[in-house]
Structures are given as structure tokens and as C-alpha cells.
Length: 82
Image 1: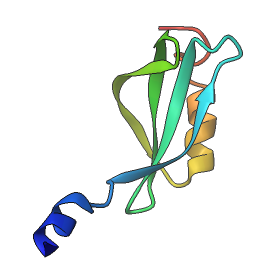
Image 2: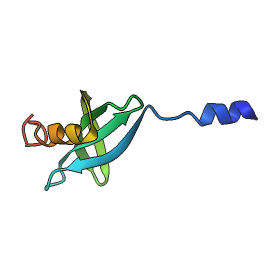
Image 3: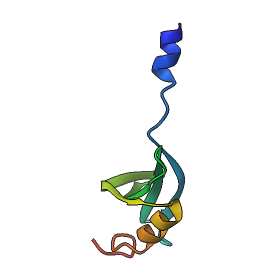
Image 4: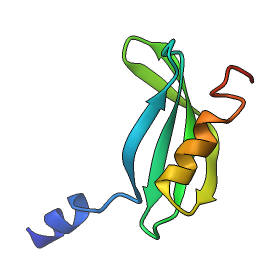
């Protein structure tokens, strides 16, 4: 039974301390902090209802989640560009 616990108790590679959304709630960014303490963000696109789709790759690394947040909200994607 120990193998069952080991198989299904794997720790995630990152934590998501918060997710950011535009006022219109059409675009977003998920801030992720990896095990090594480095922070990243990934752009999100609203696809309907409560569903969001990640776009592209993670952007970073940043020294803190606050730096990742600042970079995300100032990105061209978050500000309405492509």
C-alpha cells in the first residue's frame, strides 16, 4: 500500500499564489512559484464560463511573485495587445 501513497502523493512542481484578471475578465495571468523560489507568469485567455486557457510558455524567471505580477500586468498581452 505504500507504493499507492508514493504514486499519488507527488508534490506539484509549482504553486499558484494568485491569478490576475483584466477589468473585462477576458485576459489574465497566472503567477507561479517553483520549488526553487523563482516566480513565473503565464498568460491566460478566457474561453467561456469559468474556463481559462494558458497561452504560450511561462515568462520569467523573476526573483519574487511581486516582480512576476508587475511584469504580467505590464505585458502587452495583459494590456490588450497580441
